[in-house]
Amino acid sequence: MKTIEMVGLVFLGLLFFVWPVPHTVSVRDLLLVSNLLVFGGLAWSRGSWRYALRGLSPPIITLAGLAAWMYFVAFVISSETAWSLDEIASQWVRGFAALSVGALVALAARGNLRLAQGAFAVLLAALAAHIIYVDFQAVQGLLAPGSLDRMAGLTEGPDKSNYLTNVLFSFLLAELFFRGVYKKRVLPLANTVFAAVLALAVISVFAERTRNGIVTLVLMLLLLGWFYLRERRDRLNKLAISASVVAMFVIALGGVGLVVTARQSSSLNELIDTIPIAWDTEHYKAWQEENSENWPKLPNGQAVDISLYQRIAWFKEGLLLVREHPFGIGFGRNAFGHGLKAKYGKGSGHSHSGLLDMAIGLGIPGALLWLGFFASLAAIAWRRSRAGENYAAILLLLLLLDYGVRMVLDSVIRDHMLQQFMFLAGLAAVLTVAPAKREPST
Image (cartoon, rainbow, N blue to C red; front, side):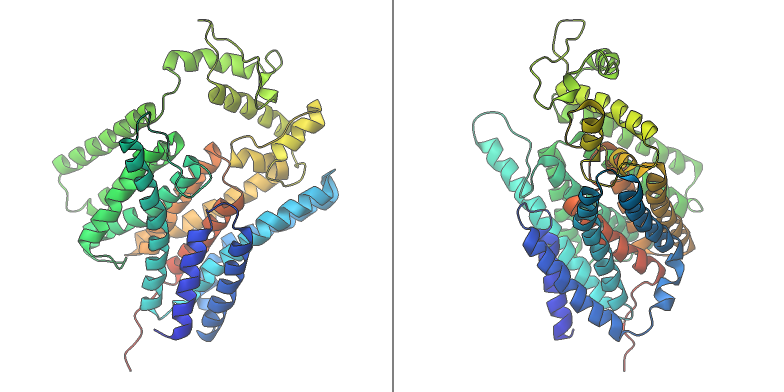
């Protein structure tokens, strides 16, 4: 491997490790630019990109349309043009740069399987380092007196850490599928090391105890199970298929159980009682304040589950903002809060749903363009996964499922989470249509 390729892999590993660590924006930007330059040079040296990118026209065009719509809304529709432009610059310029780096890494790996495997190795190492620290914190919590808190690792919170865990699971589950079905190894990990990393990832799920993350992981497992049945349908008899379906049902049921026990949360009766209270945003106003002292009471006299109450109320008010501003108010991470402030005179923050925040900021056209980007990538990955053995296609589908579900349930279309997803989407998408191949011997 050439020296410049080794340098690029070091930069790539450092970037992926630093990305979720708080207060590292300057370091992230420096590493992002460094990776852009190094892998841009390597990709350029590989020659024409037309063949590698010819199958990606739909997502590229859709994403270009989204970028154009962002600026149109900011300049023509938004009453806070300067704020929206600043948000676009801080979020999407970096996001598009991250997408470009991921694509350039894949383009540089054309005809260079060792470079592709090296890129996978450093990404796994960065993710595993975060997961190992989460598990270390969990062990410390078990040994210390008192209750065991949810672990955040080196990130800002358990939800941010769990996002990394699920990204790691995307790589591991795609590899598990390939080793189990095709008897081939893509990730440069021995079976024992692979099993150890998988076990560490499972432990981190329990350490983080994030409900939305568990829901997403269960869906990823079900998707993988469906892939397995699709590939083995000619070899499995009816009994085996029935057993597999039962196993998938058990996985789903077990996931629901994990969600229920992951955190001490509301019972089903409390959930049912909370929904009408939270939906009545005209009568109950506590949702307008992050730290209200007058939370509504349930029929049994207990205070509502604050998180549940706020999420439901914010979801309703977010939908009302989309209805009132179908073309958006201007992109921003806290478009929900800006919309509330313009409507009620007070409000801040996000709605806890990235997709809803995007719909508020960019309107229905913006949300549809973003979903179109997802759908076009998923369609490409789906076709390629059916056409033959394609690790990147399976990986891309798992990444899209993970991020797609999380952006509905959590505010992840922002900051390092957006950048990491865009990088991975660029990497997996290009490798899907132009897989890395072993260099021909000379």
